[in-house]
Length: 409
Image 1 (cartoon, rainbow, N blue to C red):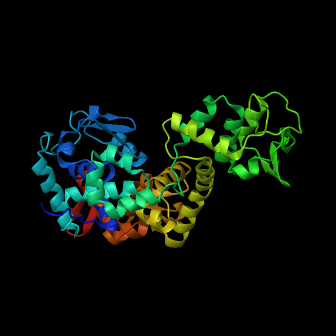
Image 2: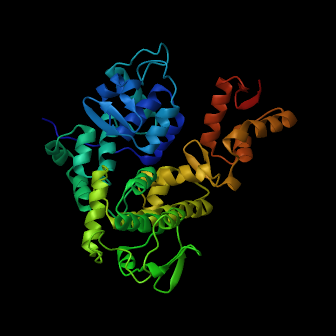
């Protein structure tokens, strides 16, 4: 039997391919292999009914969907046909060989001639092992532990060494739901102080109710009064009046101060009960600081470097791709960044996509002709992005092309 060989794709080359192929068959194949680790036969047999919100049902296993892939599939075209990946010509399902041939062509054209479809699945497994326990990777990929250990030994070591993880990606909706539904006051407050305010266990333990000022909406830690998070303030307001000198973190029956190891253990139990593995109180604190600082770090990076892809931001900031994507999604909603293709910019550096045609129409009305360099200068985008947009507009019938010159149709 031949040795298992992994040819890892170049990150920038893959970003360009994903930008050039969005909802066409190649774009779907690339994303499902790279972001979900689907095998060739699974890609061509996947149907829309197999996709359920935050996971994919494939061959009697569930594959969790990253927020990035979930958003992509939600907005993907072709849902009137049963299969996710179909031929552009007649929308019939592709053969496994046809899917491989399509991907081989675009990878060769992108200078990734050594990379094949199976390597994209391997890349998914490698990336998953950096932030996910190997048990979960085996379950999602359908690969047994023996095969995982044999073929991905260097990366498996990373996975085992990564626990407990420095950075844990948490679902804000899920954590908030746990806080809303949990009934133990002390443990709820411990989780809320950590996740909503970044307060550590060592800071919580000595607190008495005297530290809580509901009128000023502050919590005094040592000598510093810090603002109460809105949810925490509302939760504390709903509680009966407490003895100012009593400790906050006490047992519900005994009234005795809780030991730190008991609080830690109870928080882990709550997380496990809700399907969240390997998450501690320390992870909730880290997630708070990550949420507070991640967006600022992205904006600072864009200020210094003008533009960046998700992968470039992840590498530069030392954050997981999923974490960076969540920050970017929030910044987009707040209009603090602008996305053009796979690149993100500050609003002052680029014209937002919804204004592209208006800007170019005004230019063409005055000058009649347009060249790629004009698009680059007018919109603040890269030459490669300008080429992709120009071809898109020619295909849509908005522009006409004569050699390197473009005009309104």
